[in-house]
Image 1 (cartoon, rainbow, N blue to C red):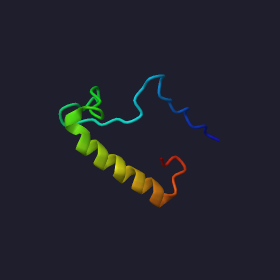
Image 2: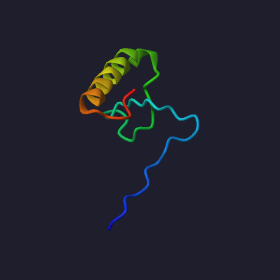
Image 3: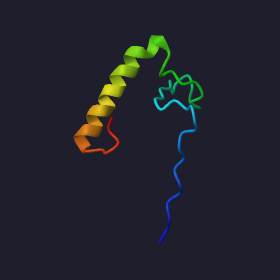
Length: 62
C-alpha cells in the first residue's frame, strides 16, 4: 500500500487566507488577501468558497 505524503501545516503566524494574482505573481510570493484594494475580491471569493464547502458537506467549512 502506498502511503500519502504528509501535508504541510501553516506555520505559526501564517495567514490562513491567501489570494494571489497568478498573472503578475506566478510564484505566489505576495499574499493580497489583506490588501485593502483587494477586499471586495477577497470577500467575494471567501463567500463562494464557504458556499461550495457547505454544498459538498466539507467538515472544514467555516
